[in-house]
Image (cartoon, rainbow, N blue to C red; front, side, top):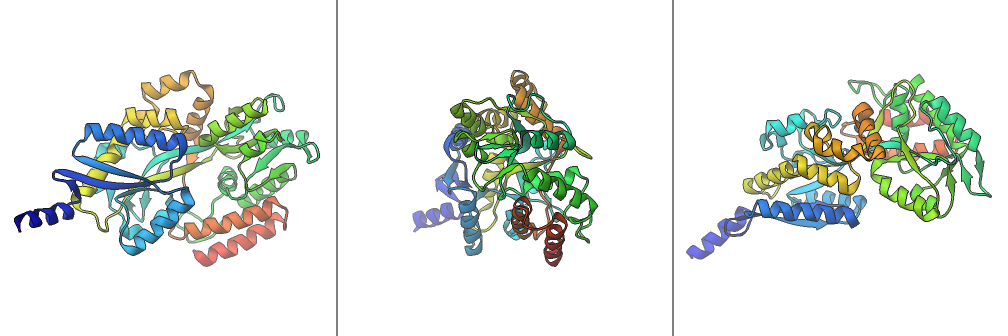
Length: 396
């Protein structure tokens, strides 16, 4: 009877073996990214023998989102998971307030670009983060543009010849973050500061939309990754993509036998660039306090300078803390890697995050639809923005 009582107590505390806490960590990191994450978890195990992390790859981001949605609805989420901001707004009630478990020093060390307050609560911290930068072919674009006017002139000069497979630039409609970057660079926003008004179709929004529409005349527009087109031999003068796509883009260029370099984004009113990638959050349903504390310890481990720099070096993501990004480890690393320095400087100078509105997931779905209409010229920029604004206003 006594043995049975101990076994029940052990399970209730989330302990896999007596004295060991077991937590589950759901993620979407495949290939080299998954390997690097597994290496860090192995290191964590060695430093924390009393904690066991069940690292579970759940497929791509779409699959991870679906599984998390179902798990939260069933009251059986993992202890820890990667998630985008627009997912987080859908299950705030299921998340732990991290400022109760993470040290003040850790939270204060996060770069201000990674604002993680949802309705005043700190429920996520940044993890695998990247930034939008400009990729360009130096044989086609000897001097990368620094302004919108220069960008447009270069794209028009290269032109578009579908028969020869030559394009001034390229866009992926499933990635509306490029439009949001242009919107912010024009001084615009989806909503005003207190979310009381939809502003995406004001003069600043229209300037961004008209600029994108002019670029689209010379662009390859496809749902697939731009690296796939490069690998097939399609010539693209320059394009906006994430720093996390660096390895894929460079490998594609190498396969195609063409040069490819990285530069800061061309600027307009400002030099804004939208931050990409997911955050970490701890779920409360079906988790013991010991499991929550163990997950918090893992987060602090992953954000430690040596570990976050190792993660960034191996994956192409960027450090997310002041200590790491300005520290000797990272600064010494990028001193000999000018393209990684460009990415770092872009994050520091102009990085901004997602709108933390409760309905942003729905807003983003609308943005994808209307961004594609804009790129394909299916309506005037003003008509497209007005229709988008009306639908966003209904959500707001």
